[in-house]
Length: 441
Figure 1: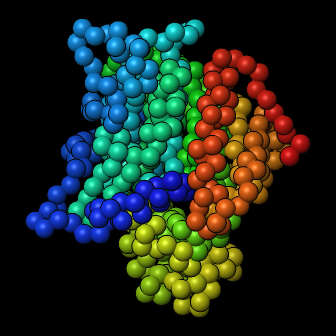
Figure 2: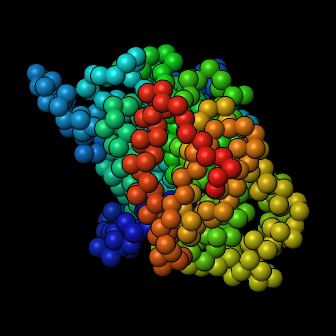
């Protein structure tokens, strides 16, 4: 549920961007790249993590390859990177075989460390629920503009990708289920998100031009929605993909307790992400639909319909600081409704992270004054893992509260904590003993 894109959305709106109104005669036009790529084949390959297809694209800000100028490529650091969209097999929120898209980034400079080049798998923060939000699309132009209906997807995750490329990693970033590809994006669905992360790690060695070998040292990282996805992947790894050589995971502000997170987001600048969550759960569990619908008024139904095809910037603008008590027939908040209905609560509890133990080291970044994903519940995740014997490094961000509800307390620690995250992962790749502060926070 990362909200770094919110400021960008407002800037785009003020500047007269596509969120306001499309230009005359531009209906239906967009800069959506390679639309045909996102259509899966009729028959999927057998197995999870099988590579289906790839397509080269120009990565935003990267230096294009220049024949005869290899010295320039080698000396340009992370800006000298080749990029490919990839499609691979996974398992969706209804336990069905699916195709998932993502991005594979290959540095051109040779790997200078021991062994083969390591792989960093990135789970992105909140993009939205519309197909134009997929990171594998926004990484080409930094923004994917859609004019009918108007919308913009922002490629803000490129910051994290370049930080990892600067360390020499190959980087694979999933789009998750339903972003770009057909169907509803399974937003914060624990198992589907975890499998999308684990299966892109399986698929990466088969990407043309990859130099990571068949079993690369692999790290997972993500913040907010991405933090939850990599946390879930780390604990599902021993049973779902034990063959992966996972050496460490960095989970920033993970929404381990979905109800606590939804209650914190209610009334915030990105309150509309609650729509993403409910749309995802109803799609995964159709039997939840009539239960939820019985509590909603027309405004609540309209919110769910609108958010199902929006990116985070559009959602932030339209549903800025709205409260869910305006969406229910009773005037009670979504959190109160869930707490009073055990059947609905059960669907949210299925998304709880922390009931399984990761077998590899994990770092949790927990901002004290996070105004979207409560720090108390991410610290509880660490305690739950510690109690099961996991090696947990809890990094508590002490940033004071700044304009609560405007998501500064959520977004800023992702940026200020990036250096610590990258160093933690580098230490795991280099075999440094993993720190663990279980019982001291």
